[in-house]
Amino acid sequence: MNLFYYTLILFISFNCFGQKSMHDRWSYELQKHVDENGKVNYEKWGKDLEGLNAYIEILQKFNPKKYWSKNEVLAYWINIYNALTIKLIVENYPINSIKEIPNSWTKNLILINSKSFSLDQIEHEILRKMNEPKIHFAINCASISCPKLLNSAYLPNKLTEQLNIAVKLFLADTTKNIIKEENLLLSKIFFWFKKDFGSRKDLLNFISTYSEIEIKNPKIKYMNYDWELNKSN
Image (cartoon, rainbow, N blue to C red):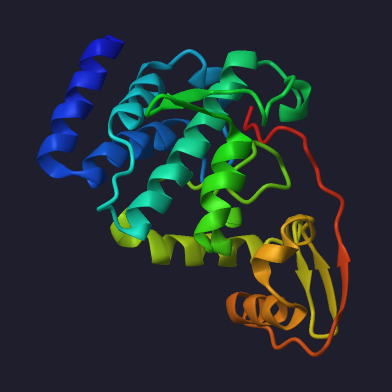
């Protein structure tokens, strides 16, 4: 089936069934190429691009409207960020890190409503401005130290649950965070985006809530960030 027919099917599905049907295509692609540990088979995906390209094309056509809920907008931009990251990697594969790609976060990757967007613009100008710090555990930068890429799309009606799961998985992964009552060795994500998590007290409450560990005025240090590609093969 060629790209035109993939896109046509998604177009009809969206008009009939809304966002869930649109993002089901993304879930299907993720389940084919992402394992249960969040590792991606980029080599295989690079030979199977019709579904990914069709999904990105349909997102260009059905972009956020003023009447969309916050969860609809968040799900849209999280999914498109992750899809564009995958596309960027497979188009430049084989590589060992996203950082080998020139201007990987600042180059324009998609045109939506006559405006070009880079990964940085999606993250900093849209997602971060929506005041939901959990997005940092949903968007994926194709690297070992990034939060796990789930092998299902983010959906508006399940978004709260999905984001909570993403945070808990990230905090529980001792290769990314080591959480003890009096010592925290955290991902650099908490350092780079500390503003998004509020005050020190707010951050500790956030970590306590989603790690289920009672934290007592801990010392905080940060792990080195591993930018090696999160590949499965």
